[in-house]
Image 1 (tube, rainbow, N blue to C red):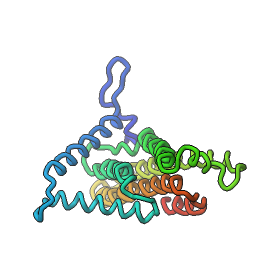
Image 2 (image 1 turned 30 degrees about the vertical axis):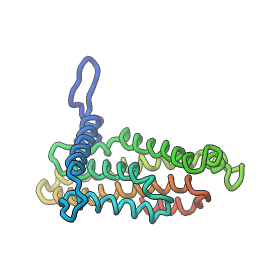
Image 3 (image 1 turned 60 degrees about the vertical axis):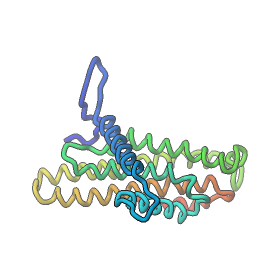
Image 4 (image 1 turned 120 degrees about the horizontal axis):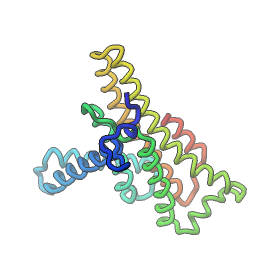
Length: 236
C-alpha cells in the first residue's frame, strides 16, 4: 500500500521522475479551472440563472461570511486567496472516491507548499493594510522582548498547518487500507464516506486558520495569543 503519493512513480526518464503528487495536483487544478470557466462563461444577471451559478454564488457567499465572522476587515480582499485554498483542498480530498486516485494533500510536500503560501500571504496582506513599518511592529508587541518568540510563533504555526493537513489525510488513507485487508466490502465504503466529510472539514479548518493568521496581522490591534491557540486546538 502506497501511503504517500510521493512514492508512486508514474513515469521515469533519465533519472527524472514524475510522481502521483505532481500529476494529481495538476489534475485538481485543471478540473477547477475547467469547472470555473464553464460556470463563469454563462453567468447571468437576469431572473433566470443556471443551477451551477446558484451553487457558485452560495459557495462564494458562504466563504465570505466565514471570513467576516473571523473579524477580518473587508472580507472581499481575502476572498480570492482563502477561497482558492479551500476549493483546492476540498476538491483534492473529495476526488479520493475516484478509483486509482490519491489526494495530493496526502503528501507533506503539498501541504508544506500550501502552508508556505499562507506564510507569504500574512506579511503581504498586513503590509498592504498597515504599511511595512506597522507590520514590523507586530513582532515587538506587547514588548520588544517578545521578538524572538513572535518569530518562532510565525514559523511554528506554518509547520503546524502543513503537518495537521498531511497527518489527517495520510491517516485516513492508512485506515482505509487496513480495513480493505480485513473486510474488503463493507468497512471501506463507510470509511470513504467518512473520509469525504473529514476532507471537507480539513479544508475548512485550513482556510479558517489561514484567515485568522492573516486577519490578526492585518488588524490595527494584535490578536491575543490565547485566541489563536484556542482555534488551533479546535482544528485538532
